[in-house]
Length: 105
Image 1 (cartoon, rainbow, N blue to C red):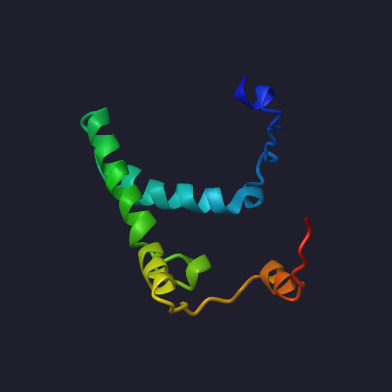
Image 2: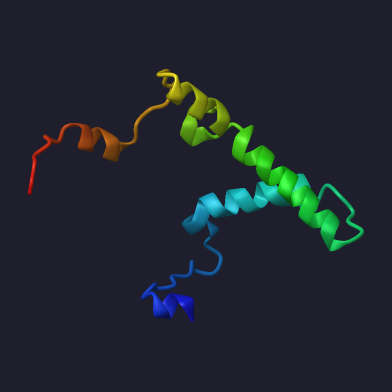
């Protein structure tokens, strides 16, 4: 209902083609290995608590390839103090860096 009301098209990946959604598939694998397969849960609260702890760790301490194999916390702190981690800008950033700025009013 929300998608239709906001004119959002839902596109599904083809069956048997997880590589069409590789980022989500990798995230799901990490979550399954680190949380769901690692514990025997007694109730849903335990699942929620461990999931939240894992999410906090993943979003702050876990090194990410897209950030030059540093954690989001380290990347943000380096960025804020003027240091830039050893990352390689993607193709689109390189193309955009060659654009001239123009003022349009």
